[in-house]
Image (cartoon, rainbow, N blue to C red; front, top):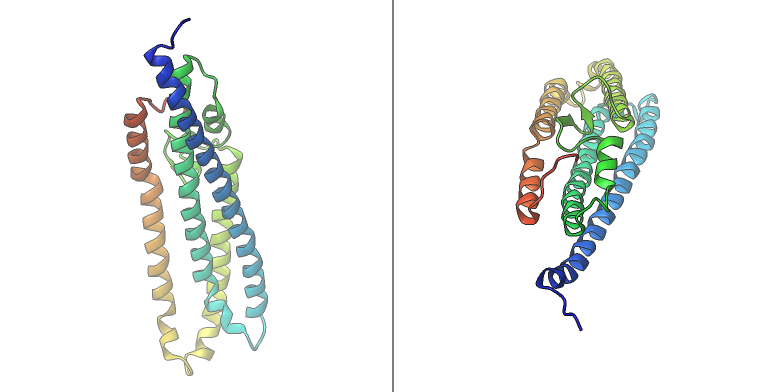
Length: 219
């Protein structure tokens, strides 16, 4: 009767662990993607309600909150996006490790994601690749950026109309626009640096690559 080799025993012990981790990362990717889209949907509903309220005499002051709320929704959605990227990075490394065990590409979800969504190895800002040709998720993200800018611009204009009427009752409102500009720049600079440099993503890729002995080609 033949006995299993050391390598086959290692495979039998390792593969279930890798599969469990892969299932966990795929679940994490699904869950945070769902949270991301729920936040966007809820944010749109709240913004519509806020816009309607700002056009009334009683609740016109809501206009001052809309730009800050829009920036918060964008920043929070980007936070959830980082978890989907983390899950993709880890899942890609696991799939490559499993493929190495089999000596062939039995798992190709990471390659499909790289083509259908965006490659992990290319520069991108929140799923928007640094090139003219975009995947659909990149197009939707650009649309989100444009709509957010329009919402902030229109609500800021409404706030500018209201400041003279509110300043007598609330003098600090005169500092509204300097505060809004600083708040906007703070978030924009951080987000562009975070996603543009991809330092966090490179660190995770390096850790996973060293741990599993894989690279991120075709990912």
